[in-house]
Image 1: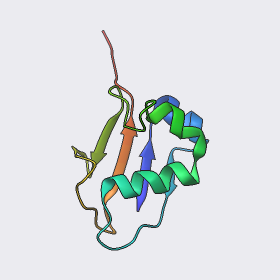
Image 2 (image 1 turned 180 degrees about the horizontal axis):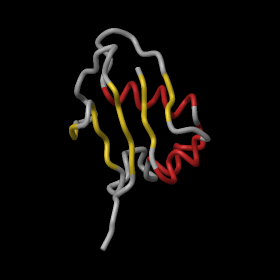
Image 3 (image 1 turned 90 degrees about the vertical axis):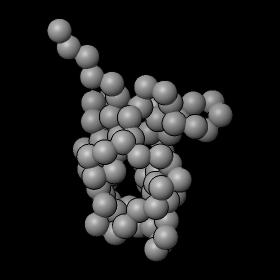
Image 4 (image 1 turned 30 degrees about the vertical axis):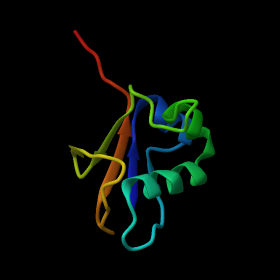
Length: 87
C-alpha cells in the first residue's frame, strides 16, 4: 500500500511516498496507523489530541475522499495533504 504525502506532511515524514504493509481486509484507518508507525513524526501533524484525523488534513483513496472505515485493496493509493489555498 502506498501513501503519497504533500506539503508539511511530506516534510514531517522526510519523504513524499511511503509504502506500508497491511493485512487483507484492512481499513483506511489501519493503513493510516501503519503509516504513523513507520513515520512517527507525522502523528502530531496528522492527528488531533483525541487521536482523530485533524479537520484540516484531507484523506484520499485513489484520488477521492474516503472515510477511515473504508476497506483498502493492495493496489490502492492513499494520500494525505493539508488544505491548499491560492489567489
